[in-house]
Amino acid sequence: MTPSRRTLPPLNALRAFEASGRRLSFRAAAQELGVTQGAVAQQVRALEAHLGVALFQRHPRGLALTQPGAAYLVDVTRAFDTLTESTGRLLARPDMVTISVTPTVAAKLLIPRLGELHAALPGVELRTVATETLSDFDRDQVDIAVRLTRAPFPAGLEARLLFRQDLVAVASPHLLGALVPPLTVEQLRALPLLHDAHDHWPRFLKSSNKLPGAVFNQTTLALDAAMAGQGVALACRAFVAADLAAGRLVKVADAGAAQADYFLVRKRVSSSRKSVEAIWRWCMRLAVA
Figure 1 (cartoon, one colour):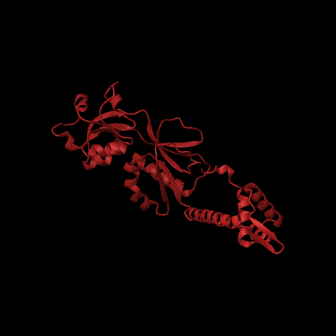
Figure 2 (tube, rainbow, N blue to C red):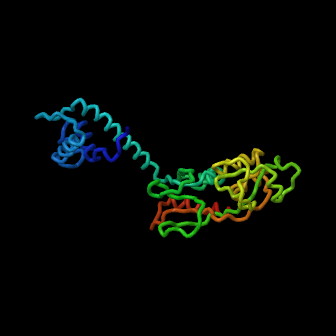
Figure 3 (cartoon, rainbow, N blue to C red):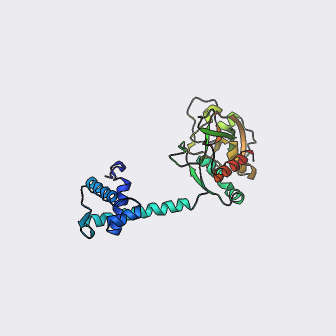
């Protein structure tokens, strides 16, 4: 069983042990850490008491690692090296911006425009997290999020409308055959329906019964199935605009507005990093495009 992180020794005690183990001297470790020799010795004693293991043998002319201490030093040093490398990579990328979007926003709107983004903002590195889960901006280290939601918003958040969720029914032109859009409700019911997690079909078709058809947990998968000629999908117009323009899909019916829309959201702060502000403005331009 993996021990709880709450049982781990204090970080300062581990730092004192690691420096003392490398130098085999409390005095040299104290000089490296910028504290007193007594403070280092006290931290090491506290660590040994916490672990219930002697890590050093104290000699008049210095320290010697015990066998458990030597083995522990290897692992602790490796852990500190990993933290140092990770911190170095983070600091080397001060212009990285993390955006949390739904998988469909990522696949249909963001990824196709990454070339435009890199051309417009060559110094900014975008990290995309595709998830339906709501983001905690602090815990998840997210700078900006795109979410399907409704106003009002908490006072601590800044939100801007990206686009309305206007729904359209779409299908592959190969599926329609001799049918000519727009299709009637009766014609739609006769075709295979493709459902996503939002499942707007019952409301659109005014049906209280379970409707048949393949079910997908993401809208982008239902749209892929529609392009493959597997049925009719119901999705936000913004997600199918490019496929409609390219002829991969055909609009067979308008389904009206849904009850929530897509918003650009970020934590309200007095001032944000220039890179975050640049991505925010770039995303807002996409809302108009």
